[in-house]
Length: 206
Image 1 (spheres, rainbow, N blue to C red):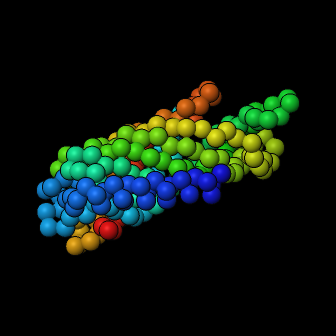
Image 2 (image 1 turned 90 degrees about the horizontal axis):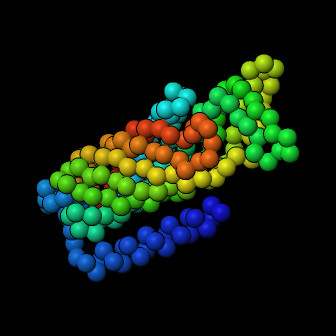
C-alpha cells in the first residue's frame, strides 16, 4: 500500500511540474512574497506537534512535502508524513469478543495528504484530505500494567484546513509556519483523531 501511494505521489508531481512548466514562470505564493525569485515548485520538510481535543494529549509529527504554484492565487501541496496519536483506551477491532483496555498508548500512522492552497500575499490557506494508514500501536494497560501490542486498528480518511505564513530567508530557501484543524472520518466514540496541528517547515525553491 505504501509503495503504491508513493508511486502515485510521484506521478502526480510529474504531472503538476509539466503543467507548471507550460504555464510560465510564476512568483510563488503571491507576487509580493518572491519579487525577484520566480519559483513554481517548492520541496521541503516540516515538523511540529498536534494537540488532540478528546484526550488533551499531544505528540510529534514530521513530513516531507512538495508544493506546486499554479498562479499567484492557487496551488497544490502533497505531503508524506508520520504521526502518532496518543490514546487512553483501546477496543479490539477484529476480535470475536472485543475487549476494551484503559491505560496509556499510541497509534502510529503513515499519512498521504493532498491539498489545494489559496494565496493572499505571504499568507496561504490550505484545504485538503489525508489517507491515514495504520502502522502499529501499543498500550500499557492500567490495572495489570501489561504491555499490549495493537495491530488491528482502522485506516481512515481525514480532512484539514488552516492558514500558513511564508517568509523568504535566502535566495532559494523559504520557511513557513502554520496551523491546521484536523477531523478524522471515524466511526468511533469519542473520535480520537480530532485535533489541532502546529508546524514549522523549510522549503527549497526549484
